[in-house]
Image 1 (cartoon, rainbow, N blue to C red):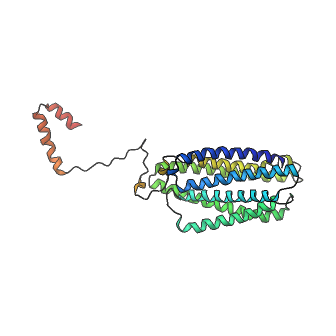
Image 2 (cartoon, helix red, strand yellow):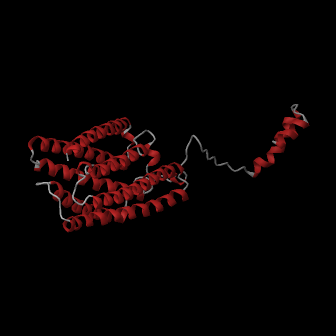
Image 3 (tube, rainbow, N blue to C red):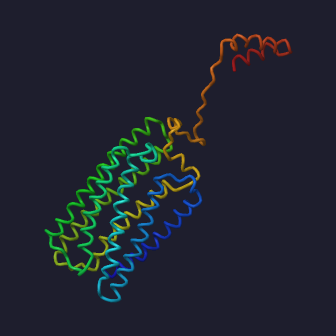
Length: 307
């Protein structure tokens, strides 16, 4: 467990740098911030507290030889809250909250129920594994605690990708090109994260099956550390895609009827031609005859007609 102290020290600095980037952007464009960005701010803040508490937990454990119960409970709780909020934020983003739709409507209670259930299952698992005497759980006891969290994680993933598919179709149908590009990048990042997660789970199972007697204990710290790095990387991607800026309102939901076409001023220009009345059409030959009487040649008139 000794390498975890150094690992959480580096992760604390990583969250500090991410927080500096995000909060500087937030302070610079706070007038244009929309609710989704406030949720991301909460996740970053919780992550900073979690990393710091885990570092102090391992540092005190290293000094005294006794696991500090109070610090460990707070570290576990902040970590569980952060993971729960992060999953709910990703789910709400996938549903288009704050971007395609102003609220979740009737789905709000279901999202909160799923988040609350996941929090309880994860909190119990983390408390049993970390608080008090450090000891390995038996296979059946660990499976009983891990299974609910794993099932809820799978449910989160299925709901997220189902919602993402519906949101992408809606953005494409409404021709919201800027938002569609962001959501495609977000979908690719999530897909990569899921593929890497599945691969790492297979490696973890292989590692534990080959190390029945815990002979490779020096490298065991890499397994929990990997999940922290993966979640931090996904959070960085989200922060880059939805960073606060003066153009943040382009990514937010607008209820003024202007969302039918999400225009990019630098690449797209949609001009609606004004209709020409029949009176103006009849007056065109007269105007050209006047121009001809003022010295405009017939050749110029023919060229003008061609244009």
